[in-house]
Image 1: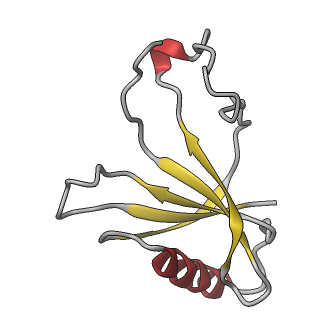
Image 2 (image 1 turned 90 degrees about the vertical axis):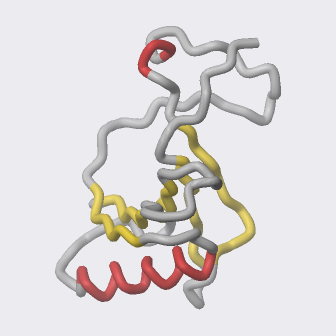
Length: 117
């Protein structure tokens, strides 16, 4: 019953398949605004869960435009290539992040995050 507005980034947890494409299962995460952190409102839809994420160190690559699945897959491959074989990070998922509302046509910011192990 409380409107919290949109937060950024909108983060989608992607689960890559063997060929690098994304599996059909995804998890969308929204940050709860600061004023609700201590006591978040209870979701009225039981498919919505409140999770607390611990701090993490990430490897990130930023890109612009209206991001589609193919863009996230492409930039994940570029990030993987840039990191080489020395960096250790989770290979079973990564985060696809968008920072802008749909009506912002220019200067859009998107990121791919790999979580450091």
